[in-house]
Length: 492
Image: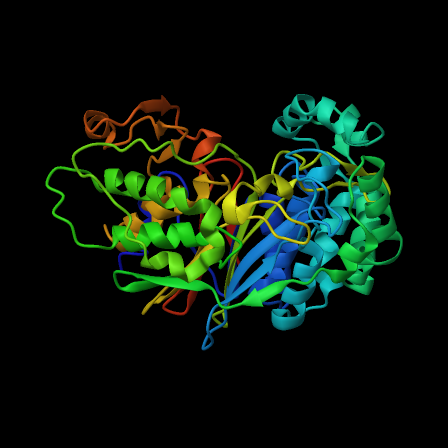
């Protein structure tokens, strides 16, 4: 079938076929943790949690226990379910900023893990968190890119109280040991979400935010609840695509896909031009994401003769993805994030974590800041279901997520490219009026003649994302990862 046809001909990353399950994630150690759960008899969700927890240990710039998780879970024979583990602004919030203590919303990832584990886990939560705990306790060599990110954000981290964090004194290659984080993971494994939202951990969270002038309170932590409901879905050719409902901006991907599915006489106009115009048009509705499915009634305009250059989405680059599948047909897609690098940079020394700056996602109109309100979220994982099975897709890149996933879905389910070829292919990203495009993109010359302001970047530039992909095809668990960044995949 086209989805898997000749996938091992890919010069980069092939599609892998498993027996017990499959996983694709933003780091090889996260993949190993997920495989450990699958071998132990765990579900795709057990593998998901284990991989996410490891990412929180090895990539504190992109994600952490001070951040959020959004996931889609498809259980064989059941409808897809959307899990929104993102928190709201404090009830006493005075102002929402893009950085520092006033940028923090209630971290949602820990309660998200609890809900995922209680609904779909086959193993105890402590078992799923064990690989991350071991890495935090024993340490790992500090990667050069993380050392560079620390240096870039040192001033912010120092303002946030991270001066004593060992991470700030390490050089690339030195062992990064996190005993406070290991202890916290153990508490969560033993006590569940109460190990984070109540007791000494909660007191440490509140104290750190208050020390920076923020308004987070015990009442905010106690009131937090993971939002679990049906996803938004649209049809794209012969498949259905499920995305996160509000307040995540997955609906913008659904709007663009719905527009891309409409029949058009393109002539010599590349389909990429249509995708660019649709995503730029969809992002004009970003502040109205809360309207959800109602936005799917809007017809996005496309001028086939000329680039509209409407400005395009913003330039955030962060987040980490995990996609998993098991032999029982469960498939999950997810993203974890603290928003900007190290989030708000507000450090909680007793826990060894920084807190998110998700309040920086508030904008204007319906997405304006208010106490107790969730901002529009950039995290936009997707699940694609057809007669051969279900495929989970996710990528980092904030506003670029919608654009990258649009390109992958279009290539696989419209052009009939296999997954490996579609994920490896050069990409574009509309940003701030320019069109970033990877060197070697086949449509580059024609896009330029249509008026797109091209900025050609070297292949693998971080702005083009890093896709994780796993699923079940004809009952077989499969996984494939992007060659970009540190993404990896594995099967059992």
